[in-house]
Length: 148
Image 1: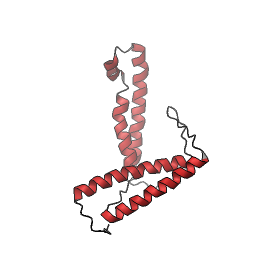
Image 2: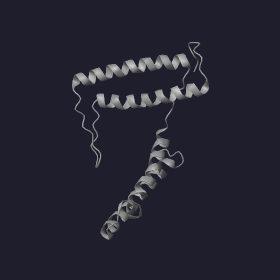
Image 3: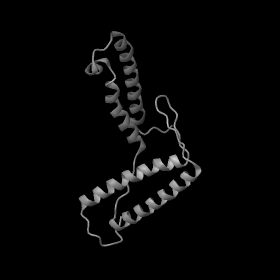
């Protein structure tokens, strides 16, 4: 991207500023979803969205102002746009959760105290089932470009 001003900036500074603004932009996308009514209801994770219509309108307006400012900064400093491949994101999150779910197993829970045999008998197979599911998810998105 071409810079529209002569503000001196080196590549490390540019990377740092871009990283901060990319994370902010990603967060704004989530806020925008909330302003548009997002409210997730899953198994162990739920969201409650009590935003009023006025709050939603004001939030969207403020998000617009932040994005306008970010566009100016991006242009002035020649910041890159980060393209996020959702396939890689799904694979990455699934891979990370392989470790997280492994921590549910009784051998890991022993770090918090003695594990009842009944708990181990229950949770270990369930953790393995979850791990199998996560491995299948990584396999689904990690395969060759499937046109389905």
